[in-house]
Length: 121
Image (cartoon, rainbow, N blue to C red; front, side, top):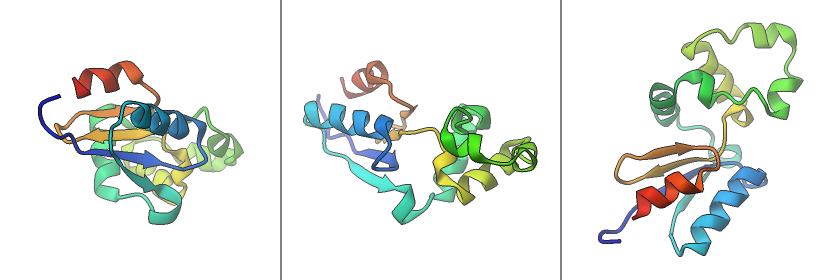
């Protein structure tokens, strides 16, 4: 690895997927900055960038408990990027985790050791 890579991990500390990512990074001796959605909130500019990069349907975690606990009327309001972003800002647990940003503009969503490995080489 030639140059220093800055890594930012976004998520919630007790999330199992976030724990897996943080463990993987630590096992590979990679320093990272952790952004806790619960304590620091969701950085709106970053969320918009993730939605632009992956599409709101991928960033919005419809498989998680938070989505399942929403009322049908609340779910029905999420129909496009704008309404999805509003929902994710209001309830950060709706964001698929972890989101990992690497200094060379690579972004990964979810647990993806293969993608992480390809970025750090």
